[in-house]
Every structure is written in C-alpha cells, then in structure tokens.
Length: 212
Figure 1 (cartoon, one colour):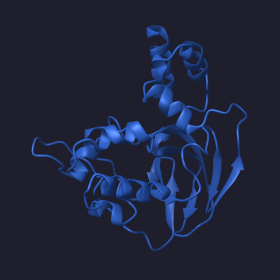
Figure 2 (tube, rainbow, N blue to C red):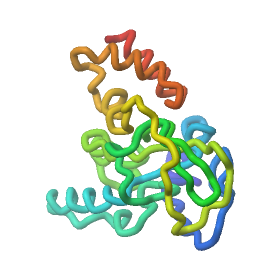
Figure 3 (cartoon, rainbow, N blue to C red):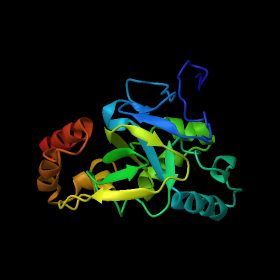
C-alpha cells in the first residue's frame, strides 16, 4: 500500500485483527502481504514477532520525553508484527529456537533490522535509532511445518540449540555496533557459520568479519 509521497510502499500500518483460525504457510499467514518484497517476506521472514513487554517500555520512553505515548502503542500490531506475546524478549530466545503454535512449527531465523519506515510510521524522528539503541527489535520466524494458528494459541517451545546466540546478542553484534569491539572478529566468524541464522545475516556477519 502507498506509504510515502515518493511512492514507497509498506504494510506496517495495515493492522487486521484475526478472530478465527488462519493458515500459516512457509511464506507467512494466508492473505498477508508485504509492501516491498525485495527486503521483506520470504522463507526466513515468514512471520514477524514482537514482544508485548516492549509496548510499555516505549510508552515510558515517550513519557520521559514529556510526550504522550503514541496511538500506535495503544494496541498490538503497532510495529507491524504478525504475532505478539509476552515472555519471549530478545534476551530470552535464541536463533534456532523452535516453537509450536497451533499445528504450525516455527523457528527463529533473525532479528528485525529497523529502517526509516518505523520513523515514518510513528511520525517521530529517532524511533528507528531508538530500536537500535534499546535492542527492542523483534524478530522473524521461518515456518518448519505449515499449520493452522488461532488467536490465543499457546506458544510452546519444542527445541533450544546449545550455541547461546540469543537474538539480542546477534542484533547487538550485527546491527548495534558491537562488531567494532575488540575481539569481535572471532564471534562474527562463528556467527557466519550458524546454519539456523538467516542467510542475509550470515552474509552480513562474514562481511563485517573481513572489515574487522
């Protein structure tokens, strides 16, 4: 859908509450669309997840800046996510974690790399930078087994890898600037070999390791 006067498109503002079971396929929820397929969607970005806890944190940030919390923070879906739930913040989940939601099986593939569209969506300069600063990125899921998902379905973890690469750790290394820290090169090389990490982030890790 049109998003900016220059013709840029996005579906971040297309909030549709689902009140019945919906099919989750390898490319996402049935009927769901992305505005820019060149950078969104695909097998490694089938589902965008955002932790519920972040909404209160963002609202508090607005209040500290002497601003009223933005209307987008008053309901879930404000960051364009497909699924929101509590207890699954970036520091508590790992790349490769698998979860059963309804009859579907999903796996965490990468964090969300924020772009200018978040600033534009909220109409607040600095929101994108705030995502990077706080690490409240959310993350993407790939679909291992397609299935029906219903509102209110429990999210049950079925597998946890042993590598210890949380979404937060990966995000800070690849997006948050920690690739510049002393000794980061070895971590980048290790991350580039992590098979459950989305290909584009593995490529980013490899590129950053060569620049270190």
